[in-house]
Image (cartoon, rainbow, N blue to C red; front, side, top):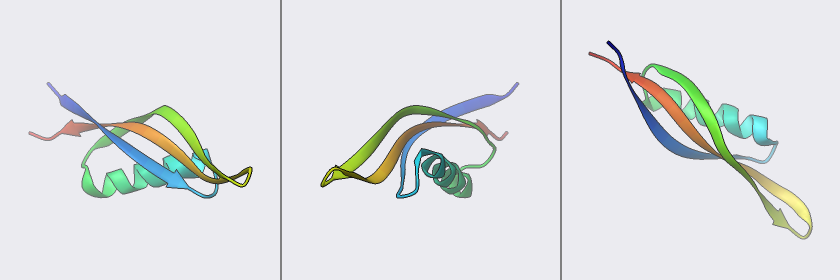
Length: 67
């Protein structure tokens, strides 16, 4: 039987949402073992002077706990 845990992280990028997701998963995988999936819960942008300055994603990252 496997037991999984979900943790929530926020990641950002100046390039776009896809890049923010990739950075978040990459960083989570450095600390968490057995990452199996990530769900984008929400997306946001930071706007300054009418232009998008930063893309942000709120991720739910699932990882399997080892025995």
